[in-house]
Structures are given as C-alpha cells and as structure tokens.
Image (cartoon, rainbow, N blue to C red; front, side, top):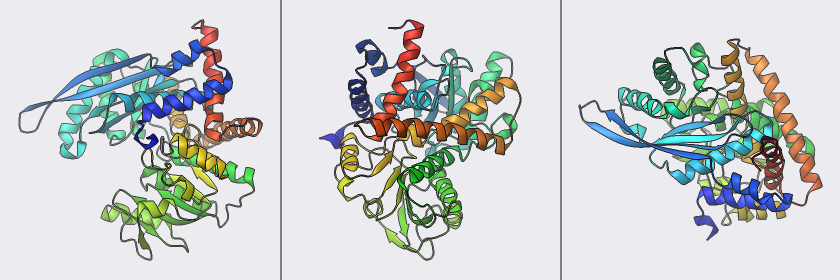
Length: 415
C-alpha cells in the first residue's frame, strides 16, 4: 500500500521518476540514492536526579558536491535512520534548486524533550554536539534548528563546540539568537519563502490574491507566519489547525489574533468566532490556497481526490505522497513542492552562515530583498521547465535540482 511507504521510500520514488525523465547517468543516480555517510552515536546525559540516561543520536550527510552539508537537528521520540536519510536528501535537492552552495544534511536525537527539564535539555544539547564534533564544522556540515529544537539549543551547541575548538565558531550552525550571530529575518524565513512562491504561482495562473481564501494545516511557526504574510497580500484566512484541533470561519479571521490565542492557551481550539473542524475536513475545504505546514504524508490517495484548492504550497516537508501527487496533477491542482516552497528557511540560514564568515551583518530589509530574488528566480526556473515538460511540478523541481548536482559531480570527476 502506498500509504505505508516511509519517507525514505518516497524520496527514492521521486528521484527514480526524475532520473528516468532526465535519462540520468546510472552512476549519478546511484550517488544520489544513498547518503555519503550516516553517523550514529550514543549521547549520555546526567539527569537532574543524578542518574545517567543514554540517548541515540544521528547525523546524515547526503551529498556535498555543491558545498558543505546543511540541515536541521531535531529532538523527537520518532527520530530514525530512514527519516534522517530522507530529510537529508530533500535538503540536497532543495539547496541545489535555489542555487545555494550546500549539500543536504539532517540529524537528531531520539528523545521526548517534553519529559526533560531545561538543564537536562542543555546537557543533551552540549553532549550531542560533542559527539558530532568530528564530522561537523562551518566548512564541513552546518546544523540548524528543527522539530523541538530552537535558537537557545543552537546557542548551547555553538558555545560547547567553541570551547572544544578554543575559539569562537558562530558559523558552526545557523538559527542562533541574534546576539550570537543569528540573522535578521530567520524566524519567518520558511514562511516568507513559501508566500513568495505562492504569490508568484498565483500570478502565473491568474489568481488574484486579494480576497483569495487560504487554509493552513499546522499553525506552528511557519504556518502562523504564512497566514500573517498572506493576509498582508490581501488573502483571507478561513481555517487553521494544530495537533489539538482546528478552527474554521468562512468569512475569515485575523491570523495574528489566532497566533496570540494559541500562545495564550496552547492551541488554536476555542478561538472566538470560529467553529471547530477536523483535520480531514480542513484539508478538504474549498479554498484557493492550501498550506500544509505540519507533518509528512497528510495528502494521500485517501483524500487527494477531495482536495478543493487551486494551489498547494508545501511549507512542510513531504506532506504529499507520490500517488496523491498524480491525482492532484490530473485534477489541475498546482502543487508547489516542498523543495521549492519551503526553501526560504535554508536560504536565510545560508545568509546567516555567510554573515558569520564575514563577521558583517545585514538588516532585516536586506535579508528580505535577497530572499525575494532567490525565491522568485527559483520559482521561474521550475515553472518554466514545468511548462516545457510533461511531468508535475515536483518532478520538474527534482529535474532542475538534479541537473546542477549532475554537473557538479561530473566536473569533480565523481562520474
């Protein structure tokens, strides 16, 4: 059954289709199918009660033909090898697609951070980066925040690594607090990049964003920021949800007020002026734009035929399964794939790294301007290729990304 595929199998399927369309050299395909290396480590942590717990950590470095590997570190009980490999591969294609000099990496620790105290999380963070120290660095592999990690955790990791090296190394990782070399604009970068791509797609298909209806599945950092930015463009947010429930008002609501409500009570549930809505019904609402901003595999063969959006902007990684992609394409739904739509995050992470290496920092406006140029160019590259090829937007995006990787590996002499 397609719905039982894990995310790594999905990446393999998408890569295989793109490779076939490109008539890709088998050697290049083989190099992209598997990561260069996967690192597994034990991370001991002294708990507050004096006991020691040992957690399992991973770091995958998928491909560095275009530059050092780049990608998040997550703290989550479901962290596993296959997921890590899939997310690292997606990062490789994402960085290539938008034209930044990185390969893909990903990692994490198998842990439920909600069960740990702040001090225990700090010890875990410091010990994990110590374990990773031989394989990471500003010219080798640059981590970043991900699920259940944040700027504070990046600060602890940067400090620990800097102590190991005996010098300050802000370029080790991105997503840091501003005071320690973080970039202006990083917090909303994923959402801003997604909204830029949605805006350009709307122009391409003749959709007026003024009054366009928007549904957001997953009202976390990316989802809530996307709602705010789309409202600034004149769109109307009519539904949103999180892991606890969903809210719907066909007349629209203020996304900033919803974010304030969630920050206050811990969920979007109970937001005044809205009715409750299930995740299933939310995904199938009639709307102009659907933003999946939560987990993988939420649009599948079970609901793809019932999706009633004109544009899907994937702020999340892997929200649509391969078979669902085919159904959506046949129905004329324009899917803006994750490796394009959520590439704003890694793009501004790249800006942060560059600023760290130069020790020269940009204003928020400069960051926005640079992100705008990169995302608009990336969308046009993919959309123009899409118009020329008989494949959907996702496979087209893979093809554009793989062409750059193919050229880099050939010039290096790998194939």
